[in-house]
Length: 154
Image 1 (cartoon, helix red, strand yellow):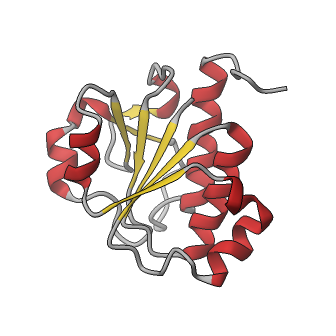
Image 2: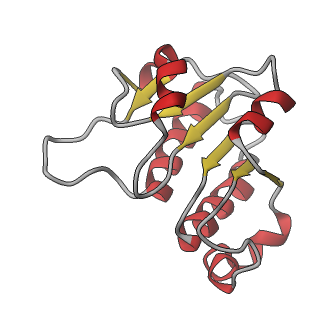
């Protein structure tokens, strides 16, 4: 199982889509607040459709709370500032993969403390910031699962 972490997500539709991806891949979703919406927001449920009730999700008040709960876990961080590609990370069972806010990504203090665990998805050089958050999570989740030979998947 992989752990998908969203740091202060802002757009309920993205979180709903990511929740659906987590259900269908067997991943656990961790949401770090404050969020830009209420978790019971209809747009979250609509984007996650009827899958939301099957989602294994935990809410945290802060990034530090999550790290304190899992002090020995391996964490990786998605950022356009990462030096290695997502496909170069050697993901393993129970790893945590952290994604930043839609508008601003991860805060500097998290990135500076975790330089070796930063990765990025390759993109062409452009004036746009990055891929959509739910697309990014799907790309990385499936790369991690591919490396683990799609555990418990048919």
